[in-house]
Length: 351
Ligand SMILES: [Zn+2]
Image (cartoon, rainbow, N blue to C red; front, side):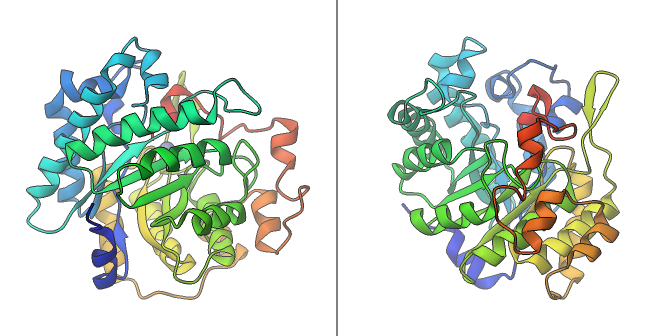
């Protein structure tokens, strides 16, 4: 398989990834509890329209509408027998819009968690998980994906199973985790542990997506960069502000200006692929593109700068910024179950 990412990164200082899939589909009529992947065949025009809006806004990488496309997630919607069809269609829809751009736009085949707990903590075996991811990945590759884009992961085991599955395609692999629990993932993984995974599996890129907001995500990129090889390609894909629970729904109310500042600070922190997650609309992305084009990279921001520009950072991420990696630093939130802003829900889990 051809690697189209490396040549593009060689000629560009940064690449703009797209914004949210799930929250933008809710704005286009998707109902809470619906599987977004079913829209690939039920409403292909709406999926294509969202891809086109991100391409028009300047995205260099667009992600397929396949986040919940493993057989385990589709089973919740009685569609586990449609893995090949839904994922191949997802990639084909994105491919068509990328190819119409008149410039190089890459298609990342989105692969999200199975929703199951893996061994040794849960019932799903590693081999079974890897097989499910391979099934999804093969369909994404057949549909025309350029990259395998593993996202919103929280455990080492599931990330490695997804990498094993994605590896069967021979395409470059990107893996991003959601560090939404006091500087760690829900399962306790730190950015420095992700740097280890990046090295071990020779990932094309690794990083952070979703989570609790732009400030926390930028702090996470600083921590990831500190633990990564200087040549490692890092990805920042933050939610559009801190999730707010209002009127029975999760809402994101970050302004385009906030996301522009987040994009600049992500670049300063060492991210080379920058986009948005939940709540990020094409209009936010357009402003982020202009911000990145006008920005000259500065030294990585310190804690004070991040907090004054983007908002407060958790005590765990702050401790990591100070070089403290003990279990205590960053484990507190998870240990006490206090995750008021980062708790997963069907609305936020689909990036
Ligand atoms: Zn998200």
